Image (cartoon, rainbow, N blue to C red):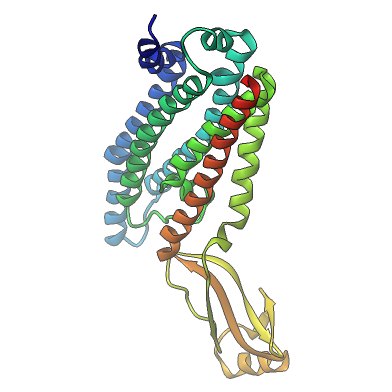
Length: 314
């Protein structure tokens, strides 16, 4: 077998060896798209009909509206956490299993160099993940943008936030790279699966916790309570007491704008109110900053994988 032929056939070899995982992933993508299409054609129309009936009646039901809202949340959850499965598969099946069984060493002693072997191992699934992830993101954004007006969009929620933007694709690519480096480091399927899963869980939870800090917030102050522009990601609200912020106070009868309420607030030393939040317009800045961070981790993990491979085979 010639070197050129072996290298050229590497992508197809990766596809053949992991065709079961490819079939499972393709079925998942098709199922999600089919489910969203069904929801748009059935549940969303029913929710719009409910909204129309409510405009003409004093009493109405919101069953279909709540059902469509739940569909959006549950679908986002499935999409958001699918990269955990990618990390587990990449660490256990894509890399560690071939090192554990000796298949990789056999390929390296023939006409395929370790670097080209790992490049093919990462490039093929990365391409498939990028293409399918982009399709899934577009399908979810389509269903989200066409939701009935009465379906309240909880855009800051972790799963919805990730599913509506390129961060979902970035997380999946990061899971692939993290799985590769753990598979190379541990060279055993089960430990690599566990560590890959744990590392992606740690990364996602860390970014979820500090997501609000990825872009400057907006702070509003005033002498009275006011309604925020909707929808917003409310982070903090409260009052100024003797010039200091006091979050979420409860002063009972002080609520309101009457003279009695104002006198009550003055007795407690309240001089004004404040609110800290992200408006809906901050979705894309937050999304792109998080995507950039995840892609940076992906690049570091990929470089670490090739570095480790070089040390293992030097």
